Image (spheres, helix red, strand yellow):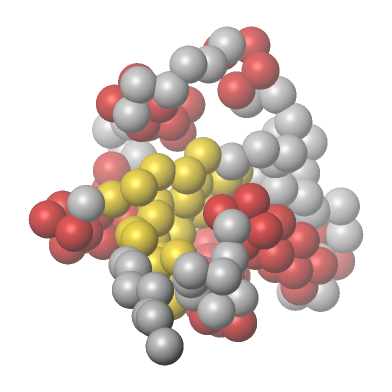
Length: 151
């Protein structure tokens, strides 16, 4: 019997819809934990989830049976439903329509995990928009800025 041996590291980023309430600091760790459970439930393996009140970073390995699009759809759909149960203020909570996903080399996975864990400090110096555009440029992704942050 032939085996498919693979290990693909992903760094996924998505943000809160601009018309949606941001996630309160007191709820962030629970949200990250829940999203991590969703990653594992999808057959992938969570490595780190982090961010700040307006966006999330997910570092994980991708299951060979799961597509990136399906994984992100599951994460956003299920976490959005769950976040709405945390507090009345999240009644209209929603994630943006899109997302970014990047492959990560095994040689820099530890650095990526540290980066995701330091988001609170990082965003004291760099805005989410600047960070996101920097990732798109670094990975040479063609984009039209007028649509990148459109909900």
